[in-house]
Length: 297
Image (tube, rainbow, N blue to C red; front, side, top):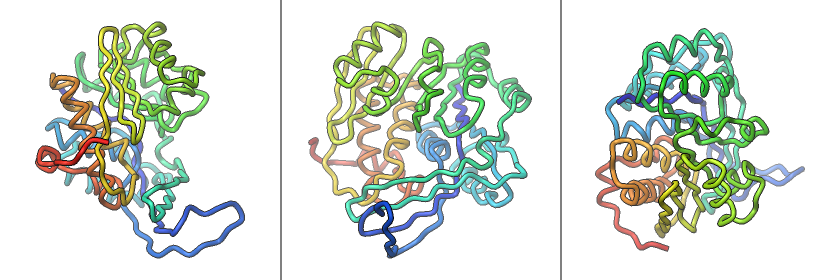
């Protein structure tokens, strides 16, 4: 079983600030760092901590060649990481003293996908392989359609939320991972419990995870509803926490690990990630997760 992550690759520029800048305000940053990022790249790194066959598919510019080297150093196959004439995607990230962040994205080469490239990629993979998607690239509808036709199991983490996300054919999705705001945006329903019922009734075959921040997460399927509490840690930087959760859950879930164990591993990994600075560089390895001992909130 191969895991294909068709996703973004970004150059992340981090600014350490006292507080997130307000409209019309100018503040000084205490520090600035350039790191590998993008929801796609982050999730590939988390997947590779738990799987030997992870392929990252995407596009980078000449300014992003260090990102290809970084992915390779993490054991990720980059045969389908295409070089573009455009600049690599960028993310401008402010991280405040409480570990909260805000992010401005520049899509760059992440939006260079075309039908020929997508068709070429899927010709190398087979029924039963896993496709992981976020929403930081173009041609999402076409990618979902081609993967479904090929018999791949499609995992979708539709972040950032756009109007197009609401129009996706969720009948073709095997596993959907959303936070509570994304769930509400898709369903149009504010209440979480009502959201759960909406997804169960509308897409009975869909497996769904709703993450709730400090309140943990919920796994919902046709026959199961499993709640997972969060772990109590001192957060330094929350960037990439959701991507860490996604990668850990997906890799273990499709290896056949019990859902409650997958949730616990993903929650521990996500908790560990916020205790370090950065996104992909903060993702813990399996040994760290197994040895993690903290109280549940």
